[in-house]
Structure formats: structure tokens, C-alpha cells
Image (cartoon, rainbow, N blue to C red; front, side, top):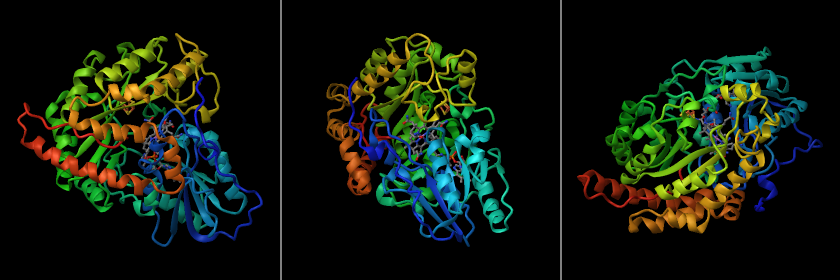
Length: 502
Ligand code: B12
Ligand code: SF4
């Protein structure tokens, strides 16, 4: 197997020195931490600084005004989290892949007198496992309960468990505190969320977790446009699970975003192409890229996952609808489904090249605890281990049906190697010659520059280097959409290829 370049800083969490002496906790000071996770050397390191998660900026926005709140993301390679002033409360977001790191951080801060509160996906799926490591846990929606948690700390009556309900409308939630983010460290700080939930409930998705009830809720489109304008960035990433679940809503959102003359990308399901006029509206509103969960080219896999999706034979036509509107496609593929055989890797890569997808993301099928897929695998005795740190979709954690675990791991690595190769990048160049150069520049920067990415992240140069490129792209796109608005369908302008998507 090929050996990948992997600096320690992207593989090992910063050391938490047990000898460090810290001042006494300062009352009404909260520190919010996004813990470190090891990066997958097969993929681009750039994806980790494209756009921040909204978990902690949302929580920060719910912090009462008389509290001082700080933010620390260990993945920005700025060392271990700060301890001066020493916080009275530490809030940590916990996903299964970095649960162990969250526990280590909690231990370190608790030993020094801070109260530690956990929230996040792993708290929802495995509350009994996480609870002993924290003073309190927030199960579910966190914005609703964070103020209460801090009030209870002030009054010395912190409870062990708080529950937030995803069914409550969140239109009145305050805008996330993006001002707390280190702006130089991200390609854009404008992560936006317009909707929650998804019209699907695929058996492998975290949304199908047993105790997670997240109906599809939408925010006021004007609020989203205001947040986008306020953050003063040319490019935003919608972190919604599926921005396209309600076509009417998406259309209204596009109309609200259009006057901003900015660019954005979002995750959608491929049925967004059911109505090509909606795709056109997306392009006119500044959509330059979509992240599409194709999952598999085998219909049987899609059916077994309970995903409501068009037939896979129609995917190619639908990709063309997006391309025709200058929207680049980052296809997401899951490998290792029960109907996958060892030829799945080559077949998937071939298809991606034939459709000229600008970008593709591969995931080894991963049964997240609490999902129907986990129950199925466990029932069939196919779970190989419960080392959650390896449940990151880059490792095989279950016994595949029609291949060995090694075949699946090697096939996954091979897919990335192939898609990031010079030959594959060239084969996927846009049809329109005018779009080829920007496509090549972005592809090489995103896919073949991991040493460069490490340098940018370490020196907080991501925004400095990328922002001019993104701004140039925005200007090109504004010209593109003017022509698109005038075009009658026969004379489409060149597809405008933009920076790496979600
Ligand atoms: C932005 C994002 C990223 C970013 C940033 C990640 C990071 N950790 O910094 C990037 C692109 C780098 C990324 C990478 C990956 N991601 Co990601 N990512 C997301 C995404 C799209 C949005 C997250 C977000 O902002 N959500 C919105 C916030 C508001 O919701 P929330 O996090 O649940 O937080 C709420 C509550 O949980 C709670 N809460 C959360 N934290 C706290 C803390 C406290 C103190 C309290 C009180 C409450 C609280 O309150 C919040 C407000 O209600 C989600 C999908 C999604 N739409 O959620 C996937 C998602 C989280 N990612 C996922 C995965 C698998 C990955 C990768 C492993 C994929 C890969 N192979 O590369 C990598 C690596 C990350 C890792 N090892 O964990 C999965 C996780 C599945 C799981 N069960 O753990 C998700 C759910 C996508 C999916 N559909 O499967 N990701
Ligand atoms: S379509 Fe995507 S976001 Fe929706 S349930 Fe399926 S995998 Fe999850």
C-alpha cells in the first residue's frame, strides 16, 4: 500500500501537560472547544479549514451577556486549548470519532476545577457512555439549554443532564457568533444553516439515530440572507444536511440570496434536479457547487438504505442539468454496501470520470451507534470492534458481505489515488475550454497540495491565500449569472468553476 505524507500535527492531538499550573477558575468565563481529530491522509487536508462547524458558535450566541465566552478549535493547529484566564465552564462538542480526545480534555480541565459540559452528536447517540466524563451533558439541541446550564452553574445547582428538543422552531435563535472565529484560519467563516433534518431517513445516516427526532424545519429566508451579508465574506457554505428537501423553500431562499451577488455551495440530494428551473434559480442566486450524496451506483444499495432517490441510471442526465447551469458537483460515494463487490471501486471511479464530476468524496460504510445499520450489523455479528476513533468513514469497522475488510480498505485508498491522479483530474475537465484553466488550478490546489495545506493551516494563512481566489471566482460568477439570466437555453455561458465545495 502507498505510504502517505502525514505530519504529526495532523495525526496526534496536542499534549495536555499534567504539570501545567493554572490560575483559579474565573467566574462567569466559558471556553468552548472543538476537539482534535486525526486527518485522513487520502483526502485533502483543505477540507478541514473550508468552513467551521456551527455547533459552538451557535452555543456561544446563547451565552448570557454577563458571561465571557471564548472559542478554541484544536484542528487549527494552534496548540492545546488556552488556560489563562482559567474558565469556570468548559463546553465541548463530542462526535464519536473524537470522543476519547474530548474525555482527555474534560479530565484535564476538571482536575483543575472547571465544570465540563458535553454536547453534540455522540452525546445524543451514546449518553450513558459520555456522561461519566463530564459534569453535565446536553442531549439534543443545545441552544435552548445552554443559558440554563450557565445559570445553574452560577447558582451551584448544575444538573447532570439537560435535554433540548429539535422539534421546537428555531427561527428565534440568535445568529451564531462568527465573530469569535479566527477569521484567518478558514477559507470562509460563513457556515450557514437554513434547514434542519432531511426528507429522507437513510439507514446509515446519523439522522436515523434512535433517539434523534429532527423534523424538517426551515428558517426565515431573510434571516439567512442577513447573516450572509453580515459576515462580509464572498463565499458561504450551507452546512444543512439537505438544503433541497423542500423545493419551494429552496426557491424562496435563492430569491433572497440573489441580490447579494455572492457565491455559495450546499449539500443537496440529486432529486433537486427534478425541476431544472430550480437549478437555474440556484445558479442565479450564486450557487457554484453542490455536494451530492449519490451513495452508490447500485440501485439495490439505495433501496436497502431506504433512500428515496431517482434510479441510478438517471444520475448522469441529472449531473448534466447541474453542469449546464455552471454548478460543479462534488459527488459523495459510500463504499462497502451489501451489494458491493470488489469491482465497485473501478466502476465508481470510471463513472465519476465519465460524468466529469469536478470532485468526489469517498466514505467507507460506517455503522454509527444507534442507527438501523448498526443494529443490523450487530445482529449479524459483523461489527469488528467499537473503537469509535476509527468510525470516521476512512477505516473498515465491520465485515463487508462480498469482500474482505482489507479489500475494502485498499479499494477506498485506490479510489482517492485514482481521482487525485493527474490523469483523472484531466479526464474530468469541463467540456467548455474557457472553464478548463480555473478548474485545473483549483483541482491541483485542493487535491494535490497537502503539504501546502499543512503550511497554510499552521501559519493561519488559509484566508490570506484563498480569499483573493474566491473573490475572483465570485466576480466571474456574477458575470456568468448575468449571461445565464439573458440566455434562452441554447446559448449557455461557460460553466464557472469555483473553489472546492463542501
Ligand atoms: C461542518 C461539518 C464538518 C466540517 C467541520 C468538522 C469539525 N468537527 O470541526 C468538516 C468539513 C471539516 C467535517 C469533516 C468531517 N465530518 Co463532518 N460535518 C459537518 C456538518 C456538515 C455540519 C456540522 C454543524 O455545524 N452542524 C450544525 C450544528 C449546529 O449542529 P450540531 O453539531 O449537532 O450541534 C448542536 C447540538 O449537537 C448541540 N451541541 C453540539 N456541541 C455542543 C456543545 C455543548 C457544550 C452543548 C451544550 C451543546 C452542543 O447543540 C448544537 C446546537 O443545537 C455535519 C452535518 C450536519 N449538518 O450537522 C457533518 C458531520 C458532523 N460530519 C460527519 C463526518 C462523518 C465527518 C468526517 C469524519 C467525514 C470524513 N470522512 O472526512 C470528517 C472528519 C471529522 C471527524 N473526524 O469527526 C458526520 C458525523 C457522523 C457521526 N455520527 O459522527 C456528519 C453528521 C455528516 C453526516 N451526515 O454523516 N465535517
Ligand atoms: S439523504 Fe443524506 S442527509 Fe438525508 S437521511 Fe439520507 S444520508 Fe442523511
